[in-house]
Length: 427
Image (cartoon, rainbow, N blue to C red):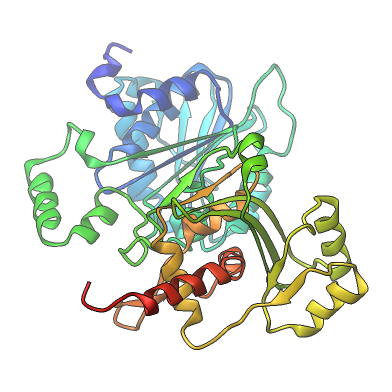
């Protein structure tokens, strides 16, 4: 290889390159907007990897007939850019129309479409372990289960000689925040064995003048589209429901000093989880601090009561969703949660409660103690009508903890409305 990597490798991918080379992580997620260069950088590392290590690799897209003109051609580009064309065979076989073979060792890069998952599940290389997996355009997959089924079928067998599996996901983030991909990879609590990186076109020195001109035009005429397509932001409706979120540790000393504890409970069982939240409201600074949560599907009332008692969270009033008075009575009279009552709902209470939360100086969430709360507040979005116009209410999906927070702070919201009504006119 007689070419300098610095001539084709983009600076903003150096961290990925070093991490991938040193096996720092098991999963690598590269997301970004149009023209970010992530696909090119991935193909370079895949070729370097198969030259260095006695392993074979598998490259997947959702639809098989898209492989040839995308990932396959990109890998050939990387081979030629690296100056190693003489070391690779591009010839396919009767069963493998698309195939790249590293001639000196015989290890290969295979290609599959996920539209025939059975062919993926039974894949074997008789000479080399398939220890690398690249799933391109991850956003084409409708569910996380589709992807995990593929991934688990590849990484299930133990490798020898201290080898380890490595999986690469690459995609442009879907627009909707409720997409499973955005929920998974926009989370503040990313597992330690995942490398997640975002890139965009502004650091790609290889782009044409025409591409840059079009990007500048979109930036000046349609900022929301620009942020999604070119910067790779999952913008949702284009309006951030809560731009006052703060994720950090809430220390035990802070919790001991809290003197205005609020608690809320949203019912659920089969498909929807029961959601309990414990927080402190600082009236002076207009901040809430969320430091306790219980969220679980198929959680019986008896078990919920036991969990509340075990955490000693039955010391304060619990405001529960009033749509299930039987459940409230059950917790109170049968399971010893005496200090519980139903929320006082009314016309517009949902919208006004969401507005109250949005207008706070800060919603501080301990994302270690309350990972589900952090995820829900991050991923929630506004509803839109059929024309894409933003409505004045949040999507009524995956918002159970947010509802619990509204119930918990019910009295504070009522007090604010009273203060507004009593405000002298003419001031």
